[in-house]
Amino acid sequence: MGAIFYDFKRSLLRASTMTALLLFIISGIGLSYLISTSLGMSGTMVRFDGYASLDLSTGILNVQLYTYDTDLNPAKGTVNVTLILINNTRASFPGGTPSYISLKSEVISIDGYKNFTIPLTTQELSTIKETTLAPALEVEMSTRVGTISVMSYFQQKDGTLRWCSPCMTFNRLNSSELIYGSGSFYAGNQSSKFFLILDIPSEDYSLYYTPTNTSSYPPTLDLSSAVLLGSVKPGFNEFTLNNSLSIWEFVSLFLVGPNNATYYSYIPIIEYSPGAIERAVSSLAFSSTGIAIFAEFFPVVVLYIAYALIAKPRSMGALEFLLARPVTRWDLYYTRYIAGVLTILTSSALFFIAFNIGNMILIGHTLGAEQLLIAFMGVAGSLTAFYSLCYFISAALSSRKYLAVTIFLYILFLVGFSIIASILAFELYGTSGSLFEMIQKLKYELDYFSPLGFTEFSSYYIMKSLNIAPEVASSVIKLPLVIASGILWIALPFYIGWLFFRKANLSS
Image 1 (cartoon, rainbow, N blue to C red):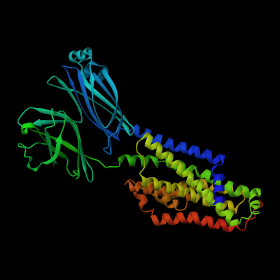
Image 2: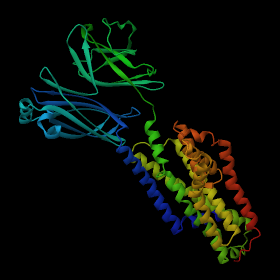
Image 3: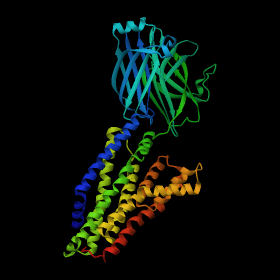
Image 4: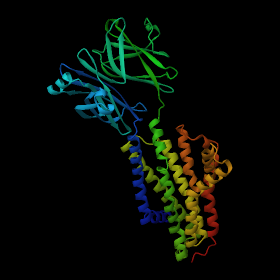
């Protein structure tokens, strides 16, 4: 063990290895930043429900927002709320472009639900009352998983301006009385969620629901078939149902208040699939600018490690000198091999640790434990297999020939197989619509003949666990074949290398 640890330190603490390690740790953090930036530029990963009211007698603007991600979990970030006045009379402006005046703006932090007020000055309130411009509210939300911006007009009722996104209105049965709010209803495969912001005076209200495929209301309301969701309070309410309503289009809602006053509304059902952020992070992580960079370019360092441990000292006669001590050729061969493997495992682990920490800090999400383990096994397996091949070549050839052969093989595995797959697919299938799929299929088949192919296999199994794997890969990638090829790529070069090494001339 002492010899293994000594060679491990020598291979890991080399200036070239440490420099590469530092670069790839930075790359892991940089990859997290790229994923964070990509998600941040997308508005598809974050949503919000909002309701606001402006009392024209007091000049108090009350805003209630609930921001969440596509997994329906509370999202943390900042929100910029701007009260604007818009000239929506297009005919009065050249080109028909409305102009606007920004009247009041405030930036606040938010983590899920936020209820806050923005007081207007006397002059600002007078401007709203006297102007012919239409008041509107713009909400710009920025979170770690995306940004979203919504602008819509206020509606005036009884001396109060009301704003909502998306809007919900409860109508009282046999009356013109209304209850305002905002809400969204989501149905997954096994459960459903309902977010609701209500402007009600007290907590003495109960909410019932009935799934339906029509948005029209019956002439009479029958609550006997409705299901109780629970009691509601002023402000934000969240309900979780243990059954999915994805087969329905709408939900009829019935709000029963004091003295059995009944209000009704309906809301469209939005289908959602849990794990959207994890799928997005995985797709970005395993893109051509993701983990593949580490898996494709760290073999250069692996190539050098095998050169430094065997090929170079052999050409200098240093290995023959070591054999003068009570050390056998087998001891020398396997200790240096294991030292190189430990260096590879350490390097891969540091990269994934940096990547994982970067994701948690910048995004708040990362690959699941299962996905991280599969990714680590794929990358570490590829590098170990390539190291075994380089180790065998270093035992069989001189240092100059070693560099020439290993560099050629590295380029072949990195880009050559992709070119070969493209040429074969074009020759076999021409320019038919299935050409791209055939290129992918041939590339996966050739990955069995490359020590660097296990990163692709691990990527496939991660995508498969998230139900986003390409269909063409499932007919090619089989777990028993992946395991068998992995064992062969690691064990066979190591064994053949030993056959050469035990008879090799180590003095030159």
